[in-house]
Length: 528
Image: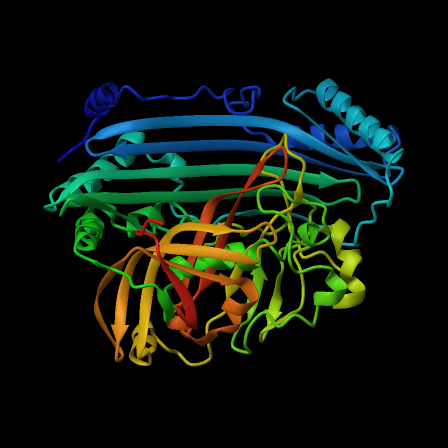
């Protein structure tokens, strides 16, 4: 059925929740110029760097960012919200007497950026009076270049009416499944244009495109209700990726899983061999490997949102911690095609890197920035930064953020069915659910969206109320079988919080299905 602007306005009015944000609303920024001229930006960055050096900075870098963010939410046959915002401004970071300073502005004039550059230098000088250790940056080559996320169609150029029509068509298909009462679907879309320059001569321009679709359905019956959320991975791709998911065509199939859960048998607690699909396992990788291998957490410099790390101090862990068995290799990567954290250079002008964090079960390296690299180079032999500096806005200071971190597939090209066939008694866990992990990333609990009992190498029925508990080293050392390259899947998170003031990072995690032996399973449906 065609969906036009008149339908859009009618549906929005009925929802009474439509909110189109003004461009100034997100960051309090000035409205960006109607026409983006790189030459003007180059002149402003040069003026800011010159002012910083004149104010005593031994090093300075500037970022000009232009962010366009759009979110659409629907429920059943209604639009629950639409926001469309844009921000524009400059952030400048300085080193004076070995200490950092940072300031930002949305006044994009020569006088405006010179003023804020002097303010950053003043803050550096003030910080140096209490600085215990001088900032030393790892060397990196001077670069000049441009890069953008490869897309066939920019999702921000697709009409909102078309996006709403797609989501409502998916909802309508799901609501036709007997037993389905509620359906939610949505889209998160971002276009980020970032220009960077530093006092060493590096100058880059990058454009990032990210898309994040979502869908969930709730079935009511048998005296209760069950919800199923399909894992629609956010990606660093264009509108063509959203179309490839065929949400209207697949919605009935996804909704039917919510109905099937109504008849599922509640799990008996105990120890099981777990076969975890990539749509669930990516989150376990994120929480139990991604966050604890951030070097600032290991050094105790960062604890917001995710605590510190059990992988500390570095001299006791690098090359010594047995994270898992030899089939476990974890790679940090900012070059992976379609991933959310893909870039050509980070926010310090360091070229994108791919490196082993865990090599055949042994922990070998952390995530680093230019400031951090020298801290552990004597232990790793790596003298360059791994390019993990990132800021989520022009008015946020860049700091160490997680790159794409993935479990590499096994040498044997096993499928999920091969792993099930090799398992006598176990549970298959699909898609992410709730999770909890302590502040050293050691003790954890994860659930999923759909669970299947395995007996004698075959799936025998659906279970519910399943969650698995373990400690990070015990869990990963229990992994004894993984899928091959054809079973590899790239999941991820559109928004991962860190820092104070809080910042959000988008990050992908790839992995194949894997089997974990004798993991403790609890029943989340029982009281007491």
